[in-house]
Image: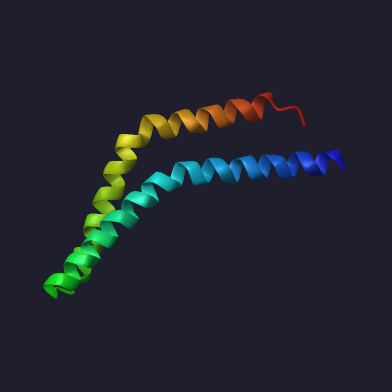
Amino acid sequence: MHYDESVLEVVRMALLVTLKIAGPILLAGLVIGLVISILQAVTSIQDQALTFVPKIVVMIVASALLLPWLVARVVAFTKEMFLLHI
């Protein structure tokens, strides 16, 4: 029974790290998508490329800016996994 609990704990920790890493990037895409949608509603411009391209650009820029923090989170998680005695 102890082994099952350890595996569940590792999976839980992995999912939390995944959410912490993906969260800021997805939030940046969500915010820019909302801003562009509001601008499209105000100006009545309904071009699909207008929503897609800026979201991708902002998410890539956010990823590049957050890269040191993202790597630190993954390295910390990896160290914790190697030190964990199952």
